[in-house]
Length: 269
Image (cartoon, rainbow, N blue to C red; front, side):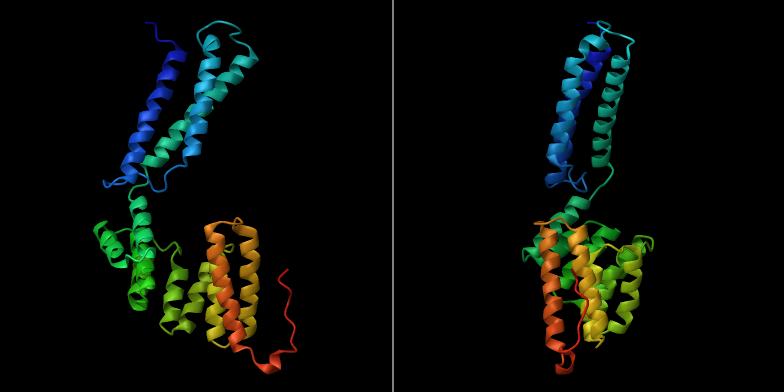
């Protein structure tokens, strides 16, 4: 059988299917994970259908019939190459991000109430910034603030000092009653990621505890704006942020003094 370009590309598209199945099976099973966050199934389906459709409809062009050498053929080949590159990129993306789905799975167990089991799972996964941060999150759930703080320090060190875990360090310090030390860390985290609402509502809670009510209200307004701008409506993240913002409002209401009743504050809208 003569191997034409169309035949080779068709075989490539077919071989991509078992690769996808094997990779996802490894990531969702009990063995070592290959996926950090599995590529959504719809992305695979759309890419596969597009690639298969282009190969089928254009096989005559690729095999030498029809309008070889025309601009249409060149455009078709460019589209085909782009789809193949996309498919290869998806596979590579799956293969180069190990262990992260295990971390996600452990965090789900912790949030379901199995904190001890989640901590044991994370400790067996070896040292990485993400697993250390996940351990810190587990200790936050058990209100082991000092242990959580140490884990976030470790995560920051393993991450190369990129600043990704400064806000969590600040949160743990605040819970330890060290709000004055927490605020500089939170300011650094905000400079690195200015669109993160969690930095704003965490700052609101800390400032409220420090008696800096006006600054706390400003951070609350900032958190409300960022949630509207940066978080998709009706998502679980949106609901979590809105619950935290509601806690901020309650905290500020609890410390409001009578002499403040005549003051006006900027409308967040």
